Length: 399
Image 1 (spheres, helix red, strand yellow):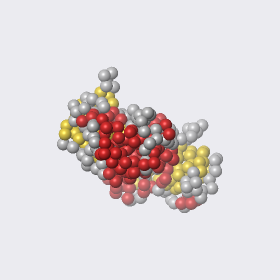
Image 2 (cartoon, helix red, strand yellow):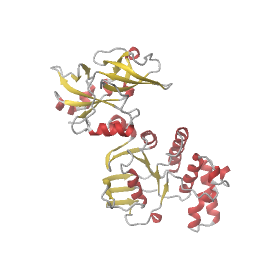
Image 3 (tube, one colour):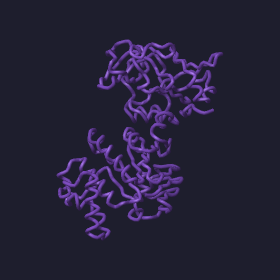
Image 4 (tube, helix red, strand yellow):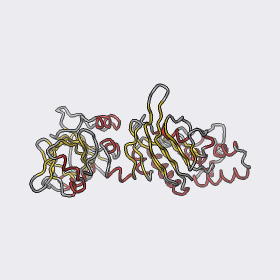
């Protein structure tokens, strides 16, 4: 096992395209770190620079105590797991798993022992004599994992290894990869565009946008305390709702958010947790509300300062939840470039509303009786509200 450190790492391709800019990350010994971000954000380029499959334009990469900028991939003592499995179709599972060890001229008995140990760990023992064409997608991915395990490397590098699997199998393999990493304790860097995958697997998650690291933190911290609009909107599914508001404060230091003709009253805990909010009085701000923090008022109860009128435009029963797209007479925060990019990336811009009313997605209890076209009162968990600078997109937290 080994620590991996990226110091001011950058990547510029020959045509002048910058893929990664000034990336500074330290992956601790035995840590599972996930790179997540939209397609083309530079996360795979960063991983490939660690593996030695991409040259480094700027900065340094260290694995353990060794500077590896100019070290060939085969000498970096890392194992890469690819999206495509990269199995040899003419070889058996046994020979695919042990292929790298055979290239190193390792004794046959040791190769056999390692292959059989890995196969037992991955539930592949009964498939050792099969060819890849006779395996399911999940089994092929296990073989690719086995090939990495037998090398006993200092680190695993995984590039979207589950993206070729169907949804049910992805969930199963995700759990298996997490357990495997915990059991082996090997330093792991994992790339995905799926934020659910990132949140469930990573000890920490690094959110990357346009080659720039936005935030690196444990999953729950990313969810609870995003550093900017982009992180807030990218982490969480369905995505966070963004509305425009003006911050007001009365003589009793009571803060409210004025949104067109409607108002939300902030509980005292919100300005206490966000001292910088005092600097936004009488100024515009972006309000972020997660779908899970909006409930049908007929279930949550109508509460002064927390209840708003809406109309149901689309109702999606999911069994455990009722996903409801609501139109509201509120100013939608759609002008900021982060919000526009998020809507394009996630495809969660909401249903089209002819009169351009704001669209908000809510996660109601399945006990709600709301139907398409119904007027509905919604209750907002205002203590969970998120606030962002309308110009910079930075979260409003400390003064």
